[in-house]
Length: 149
Image (tube, rainbow, N blue to C red):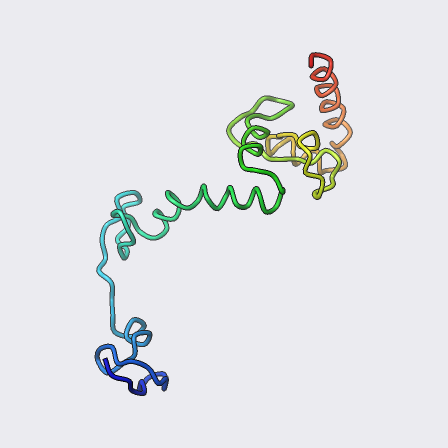
């Protein structure tokens, strides 16, 4: 490949095709083949494994990103996060469980500072009107757990 000045962007670069640099060629000329995604059924450019880009990332990278976010924002390992968020401490709901800091100090990453709450109870604990009711219930449950330990 020979060096030249791209007529579109003016960069001194290698000639690719159609008299353009690689970047301009991909932006202006190249159109990727579209395939039907195996998962969602939309006709989009093929990413990998027969999936569109969104489905591929959701299947293969979402768990990795979630684990990294647990470690980054809560300063705990993903195994501990999963253990704590298995079920809501109050109602036992297990489909969607969020992490709550008991002392409201997000830098305190001790296991004893974390509890799992369903979205309803977690929202209630952060609303002044319901806070005392939920905190009483949490304290009761934690007190009985300590007695049995």
